[in-house]
Structure formats: structure tokens, C-alpha cells
Length: 111
Length: 115
Image 1 (cartoon, rainbow over the protein chains, first blue to last red):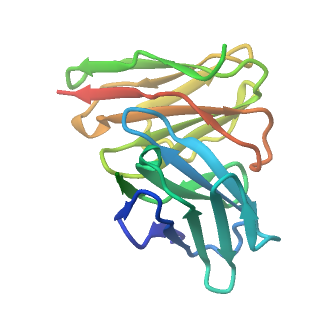
Image 2 (image 1 turned 135 degrees about the horizontal axis):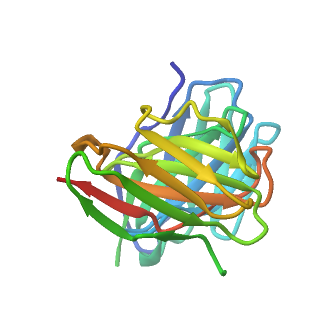
């Protein structure tokens, strides 16, 4: 079956460093991808999205890269801050408003 | 309201009892989604509504789960004869319109514990 998964369950970085969280997807028909951030006890919060006709999109301190050949998605956080510590999920839209989420990567930013 | 709200925030129930979870989406959002999140896991899609209709119910785990939405606003997720494996956080999200490429705004979730 189709799946969305993450390579690294936990990532620790030093404050100020850049971080990269990776995600693999298997459904080549997926045309829309989203990264969410979830802090403890809260619902997921939208960070950035990207459509399949793009390979890069930048936001504020975040960049999402999409490699359709490798079916790989990554989220780059620049100059990480302690407030960036959270669980990050990638999600893919396979159409029909159905989103599949990965199991998440926990990012720990050490002060 | 300012965001998606859910109630109750926490629910402890006994195995076999029915529970009802409520979601108040952002005003004007026509699409509403329910997800389930088990401890340390990602989100499992359950159902989505476009207005009051639910075109896709395939994510509901069993016939003990049902959901409805009235007036294009509030939605309730009902779990009948709860089982221990139903214990999870149930998250609701809404978006302005359907189409799959609009930002979903999530509520804080309802934490359900079935004893």
C-alpha cells in the first residue's frame, strides 16, 4: 500500500544550527504535500506546503524541498530556536481530500 | 471564533460506553476533517465533510464510529461501545474550501481514554 514515512524519528540540534527533517512517500500520484509542527498537547500547526509542480518553496526560516524522482520531501529549518522543538509531520494529499500523515520526527533544539 | 475548538478536552470512559466528541470549526470554513492520533504516532484520517455531507467515510475504523455535521458548522464524532484500542487523541480540522490544497486549521484535540 501507499505510505508516508520519516527516516529519522528523533533529531537533536544546537540552537542556531540548521536542521533538516526528511520524509519519503511512495505514491507518485500525490500532488500536494504539507509540513506540520505539533507541540506537546496541541494540534498540528501548518508550516509550509508545496505542490508537485514545484521543487522548492521558502517560508520564514523554513524551506521545503521536493524531489519527485526520489519521492522525497524535506523540511529545512534555518537558525533553529528552542521554540522550534516539536514533532514535525509530513502529509501527502492523494486526492479526494484524503491526507496521509507520516509518524513524525521529533526535533529537539538544545539551548 | 478565533480557531477550531473541541470539547471535551479530555474524556475518560469505561469500556462499552458511548462517547460523543464535538468540533466547532472556524466560522465560514466549509470543509471539516476528523483524525485520530495514537500515542507517538501520526494522524490517521477518519472522515471529512464538505458542508453537511461526508463524501468519504472510508477512514472510519469500524461501524461503531459515526460522525455528523449540521448547519455546515458543528460536527460530532460518536463512538459506540468504546474499546480500549479507541484510546487516542481525536483531532478536528477545518479549511475554507475543499479541493485538498487549502490549509487545514487544527483544534487542540480531545484526549480519550477508555478504561
